[in-house]
Image (tube, rainbow, N blue to C red; front, side, top):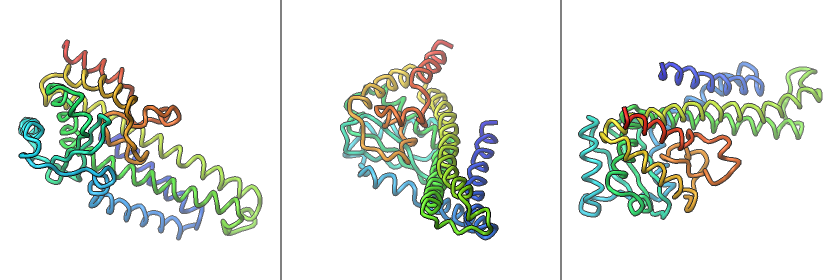
Length: 284
């Protein structure tokens, strides 16, 4: 059911993008928007993982460099029934982690230096298991495509808004050349990105709950992940990582949680609710 909801919401985002294209250029604009969305999704499919790792200066580490980390990842990957992902370390004192890759055969797990210092082994196992659950569920590919669509909607809508404000929206009839047409474009430029962000937020939050539950089962200890999330929330607030909002959804805890405006549109569910669910799993 959750997969059907995700497909439906991704379709909604594509429709929003196509409608924007129709407003800008009629039928030809709709076709161009659809082709543009397809091209961006192909780019996200093949290159989103590399761009994410590069943007946070993540460095792949060998087993000789990080034997304990490799042992944790290998053991949990075996339990999850997926291939051993590549292991990366992000040079940041902030405590956080994410997984990336288009499928389990091309996956990577990245952790910050700060998380290795903050968490004990059981808690770190919970975090890694959470990320492996994302890989197992192929959430990374879905998140990358959704983020790409949201970015495309925002970019095109902003272009339409600026064009409207400066009279360059090139109407097809008298209505379009009126002030009402310009106002419509400006409203679209404001509302379309908000709609895309809300869809992205809903999909991401649902996936986080599923990854928490899946990670707890893989690690065999829901309390480990629950304890880790509580520590990570405090750590992210004390030492936030310099994250791009378009990739903030990848991290296990919201790296933008310290920014009140961004927290209103957080792609992560509340830590308190996540911890409560994990505590219930531990009791049950």
